[in-house]
Image 1: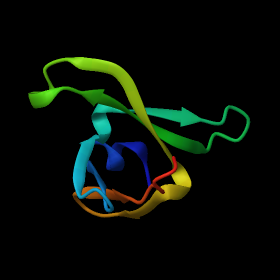
Image 2 (image 1 turned 45 degrees about the vertical axis):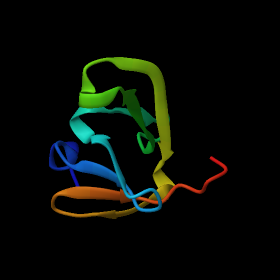
Image 3 (image 1 turned 180 degrees about the vertical axis):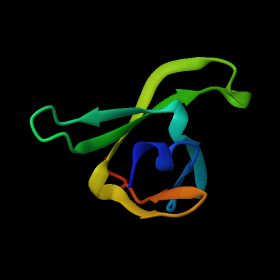
Image 4 (image 1 turned 30 degrees about the horizontal axis):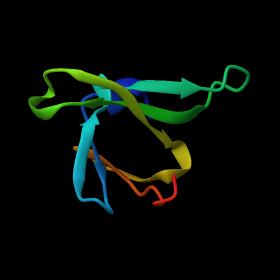
Length: 80
């Protein structure tokens, strides 16, 4: 799958049943030696997305459960 195919997909946390962001608005953490994606870095935003809070949510690649046509389903354990 190409990065362009991932762009625009909503990222949804299955445990919290909440939308975390859209992949076009996130950063990717990439291993420089292998070129593999290690994590998605999703900026935390305030209500209506008007202002960033400065923190970000780091979602390791192994916590991505399903990539569908419209969204990416993640399952992050509570302790992370």
